[in-house]
Length: 234
Length: 234
DNA sequence: CGACCTCTTGAGTGAGCTCAAAAACAGTGG
DNA sequence: CCACTGTTTTTGAGCTCACTCAAGAGGTCG
Image (cartoon, rainbow over all chains, first blue to last red; front, side):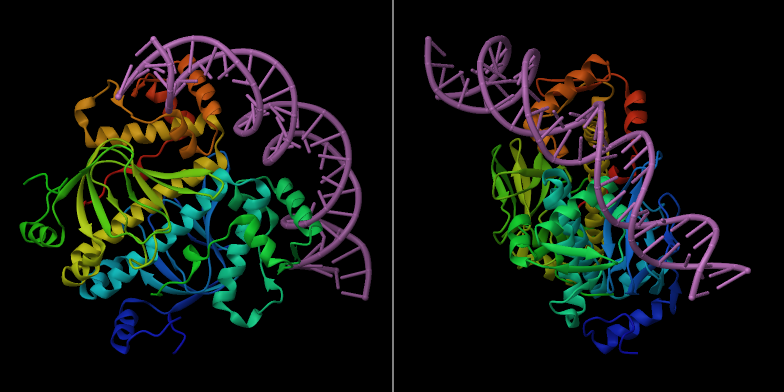
């Protein structure tokens, strides 16, 4: 029961509340769509385990990945909960989710205002992350852009799973996914990774990421941790 | 009194509350910094009149503009209100602001939960706008990118000031600002604007934007209004 | 009437793209 | 355990969109 939606201590009373509004947890296989741009979402989620990507597509197939969600992140909150979703979300690995029917969210906030405040924190953090990506995609060259993303993910993984320490961390992202997150082509991501590897900055293969020179990476990308420190979980 | 922070009707009781937590309105000249990345913000604002840009810079001067705020938008809400700001905001034109000391925000939300819910709406809308920009900057070529931004601004202006109708709307942005919003160079923005003008899609000069072929612009940029419709104001 | 932005145009370069194809890998069923 | 298939990674060659550098024209404000 301790792990039910909790990645930091929450008062007992509040926990009981949350449990009242969520239905039980579910599993989804890799590749499952959690919700789709243009369709009215029925459920919101807290991610327990696994990787999820949030993305948008243009009708000709161009895609941009908005963010990666890791354990503890909340998915599918949007301004108007009755409106169609403005982006899609898909499981990258098999995932475990805690389901909150969207229709329950507003009542939940109204009866437990503390949760509404927490939600505004969560969304504000998501916005800060989006701003960080905007900076990368708009103003950093491919090398810095990719390095920055990998540093971000490494930082977030380590915050969540400190046991990884200095060793390699699992990173189940294809080069195509990295490309869509950085606004580059798959091919150019490949070449850029090769360069980073040759410069002994990092190693990425077989789904494992190893930072070889964190110092150099941080100064190359001017990496700031602010935006990526975890926030309270619902 | 009707225009004090209100761009849509708000119940009397709620209005009284807001007024209790805000100090009176102020004016700032064009170019004034409202808050700066890395410094702890003291006030949050509702913008009454004028244009504000939110932006981030890298230490070597590269800059990206995250969003433009128009009348009714709320500025300077962030996850941790005690932390240094993660981006800067500057007045583009002279502005009129309604000031909320940051220290008052949390107490205000706690005593009036409805406002916390509205804040999460506002932030979620800002996030959706950021996502839209991410799509542009990451996946659209210069022409579409610039046209999309101009359409967005035109759409938002018209929603706020319907009296402009089909005519030209004031757009007090330099090409350098447009460039930093699109992740392009000033020079390339200039050439791209020239091309859009020659193709009779739009006219932009002397701070006036005129759409000449809205139809073509919408289909060129696949413009969706969803993200940009106004939300409740604080 | 200068001084300073902002806008405009030209010429040349390069980072990242497209097209094409081979090599490595992972999952599947026999 | 292996052949088979589809996905992912890797490499080469050539091109183009957007960038840099440079300089002139136009506006605006003291």
